[in-house]
Length: 391
Image 1: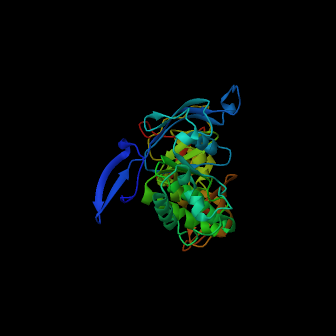
Image 2 (image 1 turned 180 degrees about the vertical axis):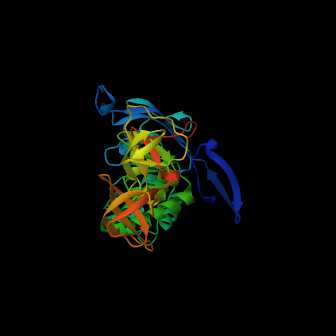
Image 3 (image 1 turned 90 degrees about the vertical axis):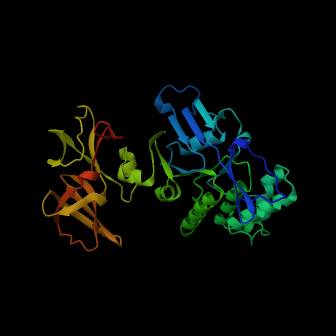
């Protein structure tokens, strides 16, 4: 942001990484805090006895400064617990939380410089939009001139400059959530902004608009942002990197493309995609996978899995082709979803989904399937089985 003569700032010198000039204005670019979690575990029980007693199992993770990240997973997987540990609302049972190289594990929330937007908007209904946005600055006793400049700037970012004199009680849920977001943006001392399912109460037709606005704001202000959601669309369209959680642990960290093309756990494959990855029972014979009595072509020289492993094949509907010969399947039904059709088929008592473009001719009752070996994966006890040296 540009430096004006009337502004004052509080910041750590080590976090200023450059000073540039543009249009006769000086600009400071800040490095926000990286977040490191070391052997983090948490249980709501006083004396946990087993892994099942932990809401959050051992987590080691580093988020780089200035990135946009998402925590994705179903309700009860530990997302909000992890967020509350980072913000200081909870103290972990074990492990450390570091902002840059500073251990903040025992610091209260007000000393961590965190801005948190909750699932339900937290606003002061009797105050105007202006006073709601100014509230955290008045608590910090900022001069009125600087306070006014920041409020006006953030209101413009949020397209609320014409509502500043309106009382919050008369606003929509979407506008109230904008105020919650704005109260974090007006501050100059924020290490990280965290969002705990912030669009839950927003009308579906406004969700895309607000999510796009969040992405634009991230590009403008450069804060480290962590977005918690159970909605895969929200996570994949917001974040540069997604952390997928399941039953209190992290099962995969990656870009949206990596999560889609190479799920490292069957939960990731099933949870991401609409419909998700086909997870099919299989056996192992002569160095390869066998599904419903048919040898499946795979890429990579896979070692033999342990004899006690539960084996499964994973392939997304997009990577199953209709063929003149191959695995015979019986059609159960065809759903037309506009640009393509989803074939619900059955092979040897196992159901699976196949994508078919509109121009593809679909037989009336049976067909043959061919699995793309580049996108067919073997899973042992839920985890991907790879050739040695692959990751």
